[in-house]
Figure 1 (cartoon, rainbow, N blue to C red):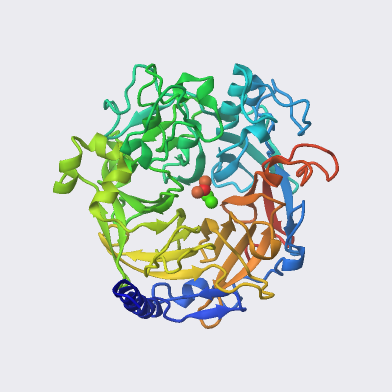
Figure 2: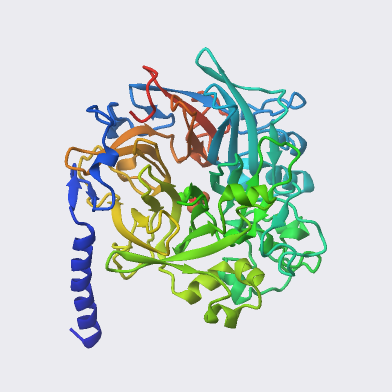
Length: 601
Ligand code: FEO
Ligand code: CA
Ligand code: CA
């Protein structure tokens, strides 16, 4: 053992003690899950009101969690809604997945897009049978959208660009069946070319102000919503759409966001100079993506607003909660290996700011998280009050446009791909850390190296979400043991929602053990306070399960089946019938308990 190995060994012994402290009641659940429930969340918060257990449904067994169609608990049923190509106006036809009759670019502009991801149901006046479903269209690879590896003409380029973005869809339920209201005043598509505007500290700055007006939102992954009834859509892997047609090398800044000359598969830059990093016509276009974008679904004429105070990174989600004194707090993940968890705190009570005509999302402070090994944590402000940030950046606008650089400088903790954030009814905040196969050294907050299956971290902020310190623990480590016949196996937790009773809904995106399809699980505590998982749904071959929202009465749960079969009709034609040779299409499932109870119960 050389000196270096000795150091590693002693660090690793220390690390084990630290881990033991944080996994304070370490339990192997049904042979597969190393789950830990520390002192942050009282067991009672995960237990039923009264004596009934929170979860009573019969789970989907491993043996039936495979194949080309979704499988749901026998106590539940689902209805397929808004597959890619669903018309949102009377002017365009429906598309059924026929490979030779794909939507035109013009049709796609008025049809539901592809890549269904984060979404929120906005009810009309708290009605549970009528509202607006606002849904992200994260991505659709050329092979799936176009049936070829690259767009070869403007029509194909536009078809791909119009398939991205966001849809607003009016839905109504009659006699237990949900329908799209086709001639709706609210139905709307926002895509890669729709007009947008910037607000907050970086708006109008040279970083965001090329000559051309701002257009488009891209790679809309997870989401959030505000108490003033607007939708937040989060731009994640925007670098995928850019490439360079001429000699071009990324600056360190551009490389920090993954931008490369070769492009990453879409090849939009061959046909659209906006996405050509070497184009002099659109300098800095890449800086206009990677933001949280606010959309007012109840005003179809409103222009989406990129809220620069929330920083520019590969935004996954934006879980918003009202802090102790009416300030809004937004928890956000940056989904790339070794990137960070952030929170934004508005400067004042959101109601007062809005009364003054100001957006609560334009005025406030952005923080990034440091998770100390002893279970404490600090929110580090990204502000020009910091000498180290003043040294690097000339203005708040520059710092926010290159948020990742700022977070690197203040000493944030690199995490295992932060995906969704969610806040429980008792104020505990959860974040899925989906996986990190490149981690070489474990830390207390990212305790597995490499981390192929991911984990979920949980913290509680001081000062009712407003403080700058927190305490944290590990809620769950996915699939710690392999090869058992475990009914609860999961890998790569991604989508996350916690209902008002404390049920934790977890959707997965990654290779699952035992050949399972990606899935939706619901966790609640057993009598000893340990989280126990129940598989509510398994998706279809090669899909991701994502996007979790409910009606106000929680009798309908909407969940997305993203990229079924990765677009390959030989694997699945879902939602068209098996053997129909239709291209599989992203769609939403409206899920209900057969007995009409609360979803997840
Ligand atoms: Fe779009 Fe990180 O998932
Ligand atoms: Ca995700
Ligand atoms: Ca993911």
